[in-house]
Length: 551
Image 1: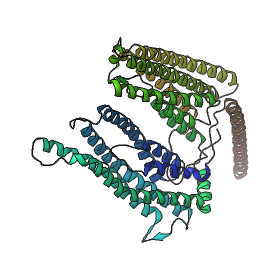
Image 2: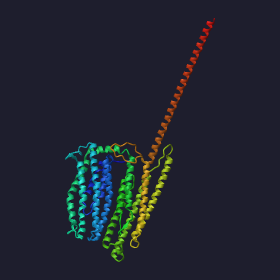
Image 3: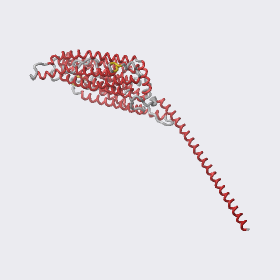
Image 4: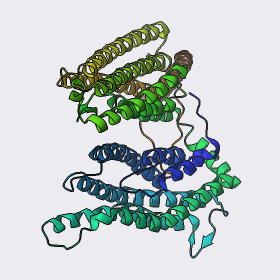
């Protein structure tokens, strides 16, 4: 799998991310969804996070904020739908108190995660600028460079934006004191004025923060030294780990796919579908976009995502319109207008279920294509190509069976969901069965994703990411079956040749040792013979001398 660096390593995504995050929140209303801004920021720093530890930690915190923001968006939707249904006559013990609780919890979470996230992000950028020797980005102003200044300013902006959205809602607490005659005035009457003042205070800081983020992003994108050296570092330190990059992308995409499938759960509460399938389309689309290098023929899937999102928005709007006018589905039994409107709601809910089922079916097709192209079983040794090929076919057949099981589970769950939408007035408790069936289908789908990740881990040698400045260079693992087989055969031939050379060398050493031993034995034998000859000569000489004496 070939990976490419984005222009400027994708830092241009910081600009739309800041546009989604700078606006003030009034009364718990998030005009532009924050989770979209956090997704843009994650996309902007995903590549440079491989080169610096602090940016990697900032990326982890921003990913957490994505999920928190999704939950906050859902909470806003249901809080303000209750406000609209109340017609302005709200009980102070219910919705306003919940709105205060929501803004207070979000203020705590934003301060806890965003302040260290922005600090690590900009200080990590500063460390990379020092590593690349980018003098343009390290200009000192008031004793700090632009990254350090923006880190401090971001902390101030987070504190102001989080708590100024919470303080106006705290005026509801005076309503309780006013009711028990401990206070002479109910300050909650002026909650609109308090919100306006909070926006006017925060707006200049928000605009200034946005301008500084945009200027920083443009400066980084326009610095040639910064971009060229970062791309060199990325090629030298990250591209050498092809298996690591592929496995990480599949894991990250699997999280989005699992969450998207979870948003397809059929959960009915308070006469409405609690989880709109709009988020199912958004997260499944994000997961497939992350797998762009692995999945082919995605056009039909993209069209299905768009259709499902449009139908889901229509269903949400029509449901809220019905509940705003008639408050309960039973009104269709005695009002013709309510009956006609409820029929439209039911038809859109059934259409939404069908579109979601088709969307998940197309997703399963994409996953099966990924499995066939990217997974294989490779055995080492000589003449193992046929064995590996048969094992790969068995693996693909097994994964196809699991995909068929997931398809059947989704079919059953969405069929029961359609029945619940059509019969919600006659059988109001049928949604329990639809909920259990949809949870079961999501569990089976997640088990399929876990199996895919496990199989990919077996193929790639790198299972973790080293985010220190110096990486250990390793050879890439090629997932293509034919290329891997040829490479294994070549490795086996080289290994056999090395073994043969070692055997020949050992044989030569042994022959040389034997020859040396024979020469040594011959030398010893010659020395012994020479000694014997000398002894015989001495004995003969002694005998002659003795004979001469006797004579």
